[in-house]
Length: 210
Image (cartoon, rainbow, N blue to C red; front, side):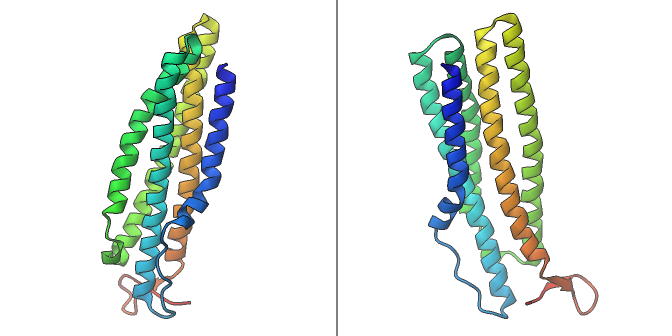
């Protein structure tokens, strides 16, 4: 029973991963910058970065709502290992729901058009470092889930096995989510840094048009 639930959860995970580019495309994209206008290009670049991260927070929010809803329903409709699996899914995603809501609000209220070059670089690097740190935590979640599952099997504990399988699913989703989002942010950061050249006076950096 839990294995079937685990497989369905992984299938939904993959669907969400595959849907991320199309969801992002469905949102209003910033207008292309006129060639040679570095300031307009920077505004467009920052708006795209905010759009990508806002879309990601929406996907995380949807994943959290899905797991909380199925977790609560599964708690009352099952027992033993399956109930523990659903309980852990619901509890874990209360945290995801909070993170997604805060993150979405931060991205939705951002004013990327007001960011100068230094702020643009700082925001991009901060997001990339945060995502890499989160990915490290995700690996820890997966390892801990495997430990709980193994311990539950040794002690014949349905609760530990259910919790362990839940952590494997949740940690796996977050690792994939953070990995994809890290890649998207790194690509955007690379587009920005590729345009940087030393300022004429040798102090600082400036944008250049290829």
